[in-house]
Length: 358
Image (cartoon, rainbow, N blue to C red; front, top):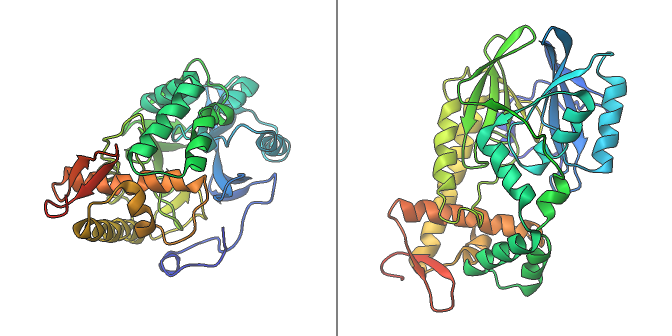
């Protein structure tokens, strides 16, 4: 990711400027809260993790929020953290915001290493478990059929999707056999601070963010990011989801928080001006919806037809399925709101249009 600020970022306040945690180290961002930044082998090349000073079951130590993907590189980065940042204290709990691989991938490894319990929403735990136990061949075929039914015609990409049915299992090889359930509005005592769970939907099944009123800190996970808009997509397991409506409704759950809240996102740098960022995200999706509606008013469109409308940049084979899923999320929103109709055409592809274009 480029370090150059875009116009929207310039409306936000970055209290730590360009400072980043050193590799294998941490940076304190609030009392008892340390920032870890780990590398990812994707276009989105990093994830932020958080160490919270804690006392649990009568022991002093740390609670970890999120884990990174399962890889030798990630484990090596954690080994550096164990040596350099824990001050000789153990990890007591592992909190996971949601079930995506960069957040839960090493949860089982961390939990076993430190004999620590996993805390996560029940929905995300069970969805992760379903994906972990899925037959890779069947899952890859189902995903390819789903994308083809929404207009993806590049056989190379479709073949790659069929062959990557085990991608989740590769990045999340195992899960703890037990978990402690996180629920919306639940209060968690972590050290000297109380953190409130805020459930969010649309990006993951039941994403949990954590807000500490005492320190004015929000660990936002992927729900509120400063530089990019969170992927809001549709997948083959829930093809008629209204993910975008769920996401936009969820953004409203952060409106009551103070305007000077320090937001600790999973990607990008810690920032303030939360309400400004919520306005930006709302406007972003309203603009995309308007573009999609205009395109479908000219002619009925598949999700694949909408990808270049929403994404002006070149997309690789890894990015294109996510872009198609996000395009479908906008189409489904307009369909459920009655602004578009949906038709399964003779070629087996779903297309969306107004009554005049269908």
